[in-house]
Image 1 (cartoon, one colour):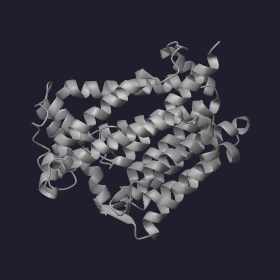
Image 2: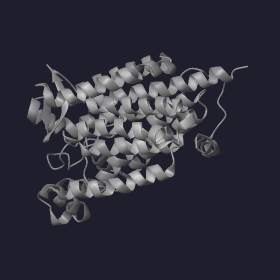
Image 3: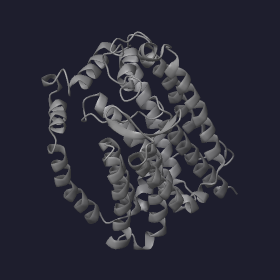
Image 4: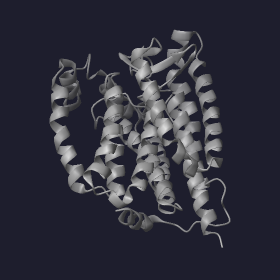
Length: 385
């Protein structure tokens, strides 16, 4: 299965230069460009809210700029940290992720916002453990799939243990509640197992079995039913469940082709909830227009392309699976966030990588990019004459 994946990736492969073992400019450029756009758009989207709530329109801007600098440091560190050493950190990271997710519920450090308890608050410092859990799961899957390649088609070895770990994480995240992250973790696991060579029958069976569970969950509470109905027809619920998506679509419609201009958007002025986090793509659509949307999407496509190339050219299968998993993790979240803001998916509380306000997500994603660069550099060094 890995061979098939690599052969498909070779269609868009370009020859790597053995004289360039440093930073992958083709990957670094879109990432830094997105981070820069994110800092500007976070300020534009949050200035009115910050002024009203904190007395300074620069409140979120200063914090996002600090997050961006910390993210660059994380990228540099991970670029020079040998990715093969992550093998020995696989289970410690799993344990740490489990402890942090459990601590949200069983300690007094859990922080609640928007009806969900997803953060750990230590003084003035807060972070979202599910972002680290996402990375820990990718690392575990890459390590375990690589280690079990000879028996990957065996149900009890190649499929079941991975699903058990996924189940533990999703159970802890589910009760926060954070259904969007549960979906992302499930999709990451399914795709990585597929790439790793797990039997399609096992994967398809698990998908069929989970459908009744999802149905029961979605219909067990009235607000979830209304959320699905508002997704199908948001205009039927303009004052509650359909409010967010209506104003998101209005933002895109107002932006047109060229946009209203940075800082000139209207929906962010206390109409569109969470304009600097979950719905920053809507603000971008309004202020930068269709042209800005195409630029943003093009930058993400570049990241996807480089991730595939790096995975294909990895010096070993562990690096290949790790690169694939990190790329999948980022791009899946991009697709879900954009799908939500465009009304193509039900509303989920997921940020847009590199653009949305938030320190944990930015740090983890920047660290992931650094790891991708380290895998690439290791592959070039191995192929040097």
